[in-house]
View 1 (tube, rainbow, N blue to C red):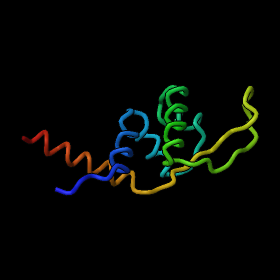
View 2: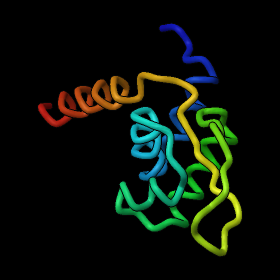
View 3: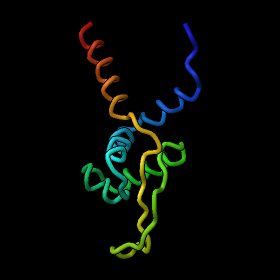
View 4: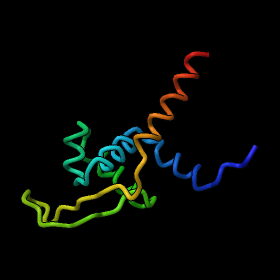
Amino acid sequence: MEPVPDSVTLLLGELAHPVRLPVLLALEERPRSPSELAEDLGEPFHRVNHAVKALTRAGLLEMIRQERSENPPNIYRRVYGSRYSGWRQLADAVQRIAATADDQ
């Protein structure tokens, strides 16, 4: 059996938090700010913002632009996007693997 590269293990570890994969899937569709993501995903802002920061540190997201905010008290609104594509295919593959485990 071939060893699994550390980069793959680290990437899968970053996706362990339940909000992170939905954030990646949403940002693969189109760039958004953490507040937009929170609203679109129906999650509390602090959870989404934490996930965005963690995924950015991991190199999976990038800030696309920073613009003036229309909502006080924030001065700037940061918009993030996925650095890579294929998250939907990964989620679908994992779902198929999980389904085979349910069959056994």
